[in-house]
Length: 340
Image (cartoon, rainbow, N blue to C red; front, side):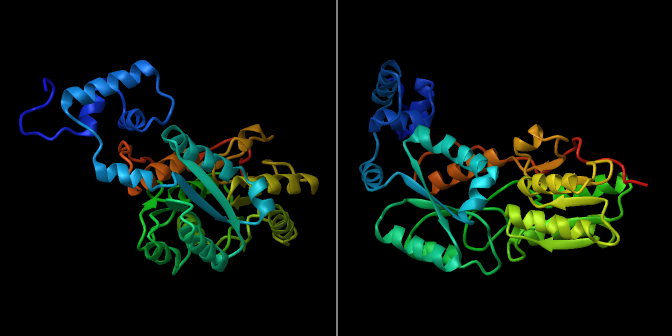
């Protein structure tokens, strides 16, 4: 073996380096999966032969027992999911990592925690998925313990939760702290916050960070289910206050878009009469007029990182690509000086 060191056990990474490809490509070459060019496949096989490497019998058996399908279960009404591009961005990031490795994504919508738990029980019993991406962490979340009992690997998007690896940008409160500072600098003192469900950990974390950074009590805090109807109702309620807020901060971009439309139909100008801030930095915020000031939480990158982390937990040889950065304010045209 000209390429192998005496006494050293060859690895898949050594084969990948010798062939000038990724470890995923080496796996595809030996499993006849993916879309490798025949010349690339032959180069990989030649490098493996030269190094004396082959997939272990146990690893091959493990792969053959897999469904090569991962689950994403979302607790949202169907109309909310269809209207919120956040999940489209998230799924794009996840699929970008799964598809090249021959994995698929199984998406389910559920109404509550009990229905979600029953779904995981059924998926595990029927051996339909290899693991799950969890969203919307809550206090005393029962899902990590349930999935551990079922033997399903999992990763969680968002706030730290015991019993399961968490994927997300560092310092989840950073973006809303920048929002508070931005609105203060513009002279706003009547600032209302339209949040998501109070039981979600990210709702609590961001609201606490926002209130601390603001330095004074918000004009109002309203909780919603993220739906269009709830966003419109919350905006109307806030605009009807005797001491009307001069700035509204929403927990996501979709609700912020609803808020801008509601304010404009009420005869208010954005940002001359009312400043509006969203959260997510979705493409629709750049298409809107005025363009939406928002917080970029890199949704696609987070989805891709979650997919890689879950694939690694499922036994795949996935390149280590840390998720760096933190949520950051993106200032556009929907915020301006507080009206006199």
